[in-house]
Amino acid sequence: MNCDVALVDEITVLSCRGRGDNDALPYFKEVAEELVDDVAVTRVVIDLGEVDYLCSAFLGVILLFHRQIKEKGGNLRVARLTPFVKSLFELTNLDSILAAQDTLEHAIRELAEAP
Image 1: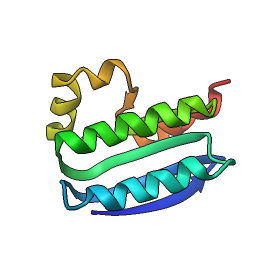
Image 2: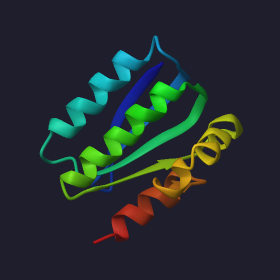
Image 3: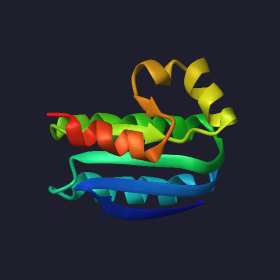
């Protein structure tokens, strides 16, 4: 897995590609921890449009990342879920906790308009 971080309209966009398996977990955790530690990062979109697989541990890290951003007074969204990843979010009820948007633009706009 590879992840790129970009700033779009004052929203931090974490764009990930590849497989979210146990091998990729330490890398993703490190990237997420760096963003949590950055005081300026309070609004985050994780773009999963090029992620074809996520293991259950990876889902747990995304949930932890979401909680840590919320504890900072921020918001986190996910965008562009592939069919497999979307089914995992639905099966685990993560979709009821973490807002998912069909497009990156919609997720960015939603966060930009949030208080």
